[in-house]
Image 1 (cartoon, rainbow, N blue to C red):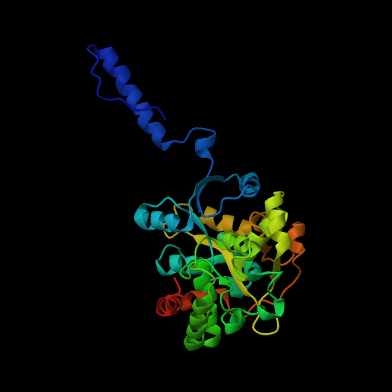
Image 2 (cartoon, rainbow, N blue to C red):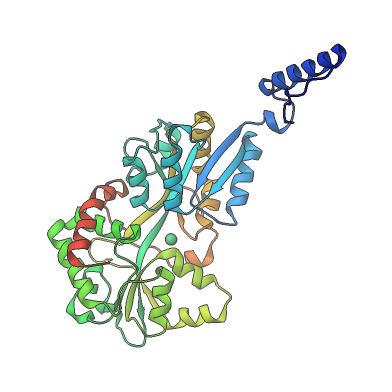
Length: 357
Ligand code: FE
């Protein structure tokens, strides 16, 4: 739309009339969308996902529905900050985040509006969504253990609990204890075993550290490969990313590092999600719900999960990711993802007391 100029004062009446008419036309056209793009419904998507394959995911939605997607991609924390500062003026319709810790935070901060969708209730397993319809998990990731194959025997490190055992003194590496991935793991532990057991675990982990927590999950895997750490925790997709890498340095890492599913004989491996919901002040609520329902179709599920080497959550959705499939099946913990959030505050308190930075 061209700028409307009303400050100019033509000297002759005819000129005045023409300018007046122009202003009227311009103002009227503000309210009457012209043909083409302006008429196309729009969905404003705030996403903490930044994957190549998501392009196809969004293009396919537009093709099916005629709804154009405007994307704002930010890191999880900046994205939540943005939503908070925009408040009721936020144009966001859908918010996508990773990890139950952040989804829970957004829910508690009132950044989602609960929705009622039979499609989502039918397709997304109950333990992978908020019980009030605030958010839904669309893919899963597991928190797994990697170890130095040359110096550590797998049976010494095959549970989360064993990492805190004196047998692993001086071997353990993780990212910061207050990162959402660690908060969720500890939150699940609080749910399962109670606060006292979770705190004993956190203290044992701190006592066993090979170095103070630093870096991301991939840095922990690399430090295991270099021999600096004997054992580390990582989200599954970082491991799969290295498996799929053509870089000879990554392939060397993969050769030296062992991978295992934690707690297979006991409580099962900790599972988390990537997911999203309808933004609290969504101007296009119907389109937002339609988009979330689209993400729960088997076809969209394959794209969504593939984007970050994760697993689809909807029955019948298949992954064509050979590296991911090569990990095989595993026993997952039974703690519902929706209840992990509740353990967050206790988890942070425990980490502070244990000095797990
Ligand atoms: Fe991550």
